[in-house]
Length: 319
Image 1: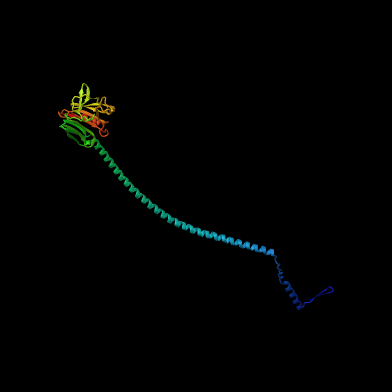
Image 2 (image 1 turned 135 degrees about the vertical axis):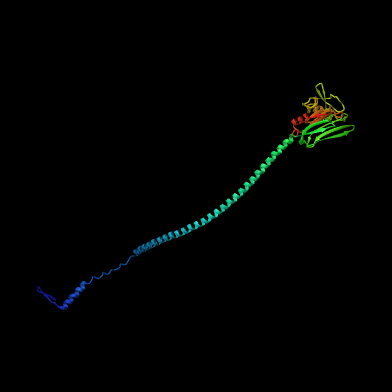
């Protein structure tokens, strides 16, 4: 125990006192107690700010989660779609490929059939062309082929195109006279005919049929149409369009202009008229006692061209 008295320091070593000191020291050695924090009451505005900050934080966190979720979902869905597309595309490609192959095979089959048809058509065409050529050659041969006709009653023989068929001559008795008419079975536009020397024509008509003739009269280099019943008549003078020679005689080629002084006016006036129409004919003399002449008439130059007509006249033989 310290006792300070009048400057004298008195030390008292008292156990209780030590205890007291120790107690004090212990008290002093204790850590300082935490200062009690006094919470201040927050204002309304501060609370609102805190609420906003919290919402922002909450929103920010939610948005990030949403974005992350969307990205993940997109990856999953995209992968699924990609896989589906690949799978579907593969199936479609297989289907399209199969369809294309089938179409190609069908097209090739149709093309092959068409080729076969075309080949057949070409062969048919070639056969037809060959047949046509053969027929044309035969036609030319037939066209150039000649047949000979001979009539002993007339003392007449000549060659004619074989394509004209057969020649027939009809003799028709009229009163005491005879008319003969010759025709070709396959060309009715070529005819010939004449009359017997005792033929008497009807006097009621002034028009003479060209085939009602006894031939022609050659007198001092002038030619005349020999009318029936009148030998050596000079009534109808003629100027031949052409004179064709044959063995032992000649044929006079006649048209409507060959009769001198004869025209449509004289015909209409009732004057004697030898009618040959628009045709071309020929007059020939025969040597038989009963038949002195024959007339040919060609009415179609498409069937019997003038050249062929002249060739026929050149082939004439009179016996």
